Length: 499
Image (cartoon, rainbow, N blue to C red):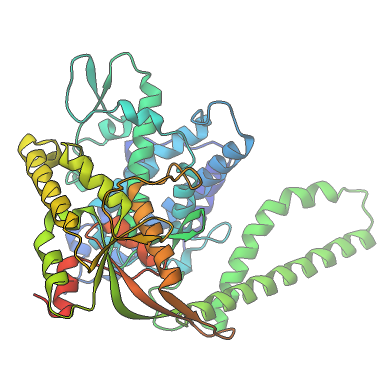
């Protein structure tokens, strides 16, 4: 099979900076995967389309492998200018961004992702785990330059376009990808602006789009102050059963071959012409034992991974009692919230986070919408309508209904709506409002929920009385990754039989 040798050559060239990407290189593999002739009549991927997609994703994986390695080295070195990445990184980021644009346009083609078990080249890891690592690394870069970006043409501004977008303008597979124009001051450094714009697009793709897909590809894991995006794509997700022992042995041999590639130069240096045959035999025996040891370790690691994916890690029993709506619920569904608390003998209590009160107060004064960046949020009529809805919500909350409580991010509950801000100097000051709402739910769960102790190998048993109500996809993803029950308000109303 020619695919694996070609992939090895691409990996070798990328590792030594001998590869560049023109229009043809960046677009390789995109058009065949969406060719109607390769698609199955029933709507499923045909075998040819599956193979074309697997090969394309493996090439993408090799580019990601090199880029992740370079970015990791760059961040470890802690340069003065964090965004001054190496030339090799600047070469690799544009094709990665183009591939992300393609996946953004054609999620129905590649999702759910196919298995690449038969095309493993290089170190262990698939495209999705490396993409998650890339997103975690890019999130550490300086994005402050985006504060000068505008979505409308102002005096002294000019449109900012990325070189890769200009090169592939009119390319059929990317024609459905329509970006809102971005404008920057004419005297602003062009390279810095392009780097940050590309950074923003990649972060949006990873942190919002891939997390919000069905089925999802990435998820956000939160543990106290530690936040990390991880892949939820099984390495053998196209199968209904674990791979056979023979297949696992073949995969391990391929992985060991990649180790031997990296150690080949060392072997040549250590064995000279003057080395005795006895020493050669000892060295060969040593290498053979090391290969067997690595093979055993890789085999056990894969077995553990397969076993961990075959069981449910968390089992949550939900008995809704405390409902935590976000700001948009009060703007768009105030009447439904009123229905919940006014229902006779209602078992539900509305818990209003302080940050939501603050947002409603700001909107009532004509502030920005809680969902920035949309065209409607810039419409004066929309701003006026949102302001009126916010004032109605505040008046509603000031009536102090017994089933409405206010809550701080630390989980403290009180009846008054007088306070719309809280002292958060001891917490992470860069936390967004959505994160503060989630932190509120987590702290409420600590006092109004419990976890049953479980033995090793059994799923964790959680009991939750808190339900977060939001239609924000990104916030829902964060909540689910933190074991917080979450629903859209209309869906919850249907489930509760309230309308």
